[in-house]
Image (cartoon, rainbow, N blue to C red; front, side, top):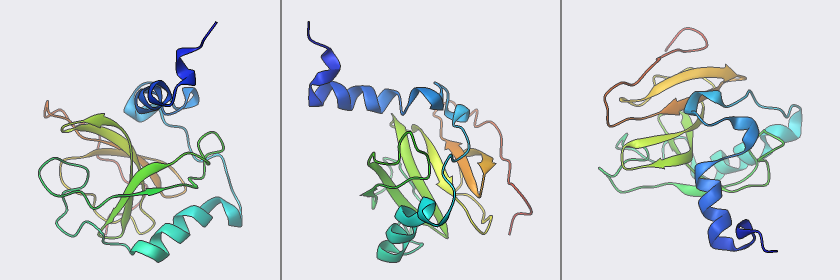
Length: 152
């Protein structure tokens, strides 16, 4: 018996809908990072050292309204997805990682170490260690705008 997730196309389709079962179905069900220590942030540090903190200068992060400057990255500090590749881009001192979505309905995580203001039009809330979950929506109902501390 063949599992349909054994083909690369089917696996990719599944990965675009479900990041990992422990991450839930909704955008705001992502758990806090599960890795700690010096190696937990090695992938992020390398990505930032290579690309800087302002790749998407126009502020149009993961939208169809502007050319996408994102690049693939690995090494997120969650054991369940540490070896997976995701699109990521930086804007104004924040690393945005895209998990799933289409058009203007996207979601993912962001690393915001200085608690900078997020790009306009995003719902976001902290999940720990300067990490946030974020989402955009065509419906206009953007949900929470919660920072982990004082916003700069």
